[in-house]
Image (tube, rainbow, N blue to C red; front, side, top):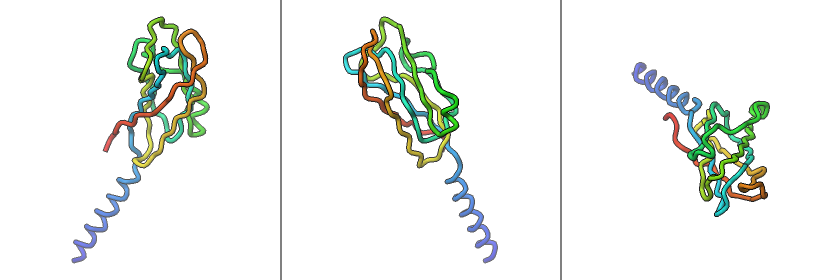
Length: 136
């Protein structure tokens, strides 16, 4: 009986420890620019520790965006990029992929700080994070 109780205790402690361990996942930063090609953006991301950053899905956004390394220490990330590509896409565009370390209950938020259409006119696109599962 003691062995069974000890085994259940160890099993329960292991399950609790697994729930608290950090998880790794990716977030796609998606900008909805409507019918105007996107020329530049700057956003603020909060909610987890960023461990990697890569570019987006089109030629115009293939390079990893710029970011503020000092902001990482405060639990947020400021990401910005621009393109001079004459064929910059319009519509719903994945402009970056962000690799984060957090926990399964982490709540990530993104806020648009500034944006411009191709040519430089200020614009107000919608931004969102699309969360992809990480390690289980």
